[in-house]
Amino acid sequence: MKQEDKAPSGPGVGLVSSQDFHFGDSPEDVLHLDCGKTLRGVNIRYETYGTLNVDKSNAILVEHALTGDAHLAGYHSETDKKSGWWDPMVGPGRPFDTNKYFIICSNILGGCSGSTGPSSINPDTGKPYRMNFPVITIADMVRAQKRLIDHLGIKKLLTVVGGSMGGMLAVQWPILYPDAVRSVTPIATAIQITAQSIAFNWVGREAIMADPGWNHGNYTEQPQKGLAIARMLAHITYLSDESMSNKFGRELQSAEDYSFNFNMDFRVESYLNYQGSRFVERFDANSYLYITRAIDYFDVSDGTGGDYAKAFRDVKCPFLIVSFSSDWLFPEYQSRSLARILLENGNDVTLCNIKSGYGHDAFLLEYETLGRLITGFLINISQEVSS
Image (cartoon, rainbow, N blue to C red):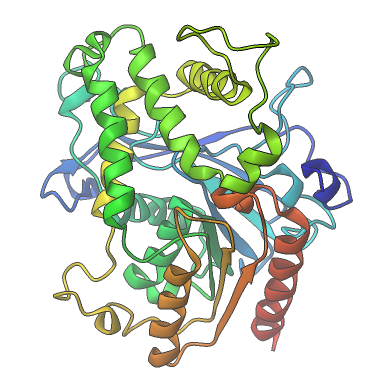
């Protein structure tokens, strides 16, 4: 089934605009980081959809993945050709129903789409941070988001939901702030990054830093070749053998026979080249380095001596955990591990493994099945709040 056939019916959110939340200008308001350093003058770019109810109990925080941003749904202008990254899921009558819920999506700390990151101006020097930006963690990103949620006056989020890296952020939320979350919906994610994923991230960063244009992070133009290679490598991990075979097979790009040189012969080569070149236009190379390192460091048992039961000891909220059958970047067993730990902790857990051939990208494509699961889960959580 084609992606567009899976999109839920109902109108979208239409035209939307981004907002900025700024904090950390005074010494007592700085953001303390896991690396031991602090950040001041922090900006968080975010978007909201729907209306916050009187008791502020209908707020949902949606977390984006590695290369995502705050633009979750809708369009920024009448001339925009592309909607937000999870647009089919947000709007009246859609899974994240804006007639019922107040949806928040913020660009993560370290990003390059409005939130403070390596390309931002360091208030201490008046120049871009570049590689002087402190190394950050997933927990640091959540701490910055908590400042935003506090700013909005929300005491308890109805749910925190996200896929891939967004799922890591979602899992981290109740560990840091157990009283601020009513439920969690981690999708296609894990509670620690594996050696294989660390390896892919390492090669991607090496490709960027080996590009002469990177210049130790002091570039005026993106190190195009290195960043494009990093994106191409990562993009392969988001797909599956089945999806690549169905989409490309061994089809040639244009000629009827092999070129017998090292130009692009196959459609899949052209596709990856296109993905790499488009990525360079919208993403910052240094942000890619910092965010992938934060993913490498992610392990919810840090600080507990590897004791996952202890890590979740204060987490009492229900979870909807979703994995996908063809996802080899975050395989099903990783979601089962999270579910087992939570069940032993006494949490109410729903675990679903969706049969899909899309690979890791299924969380961005399986709108119909994923939408039904989320819709039902949110109805149940909302009923518990009402009662």
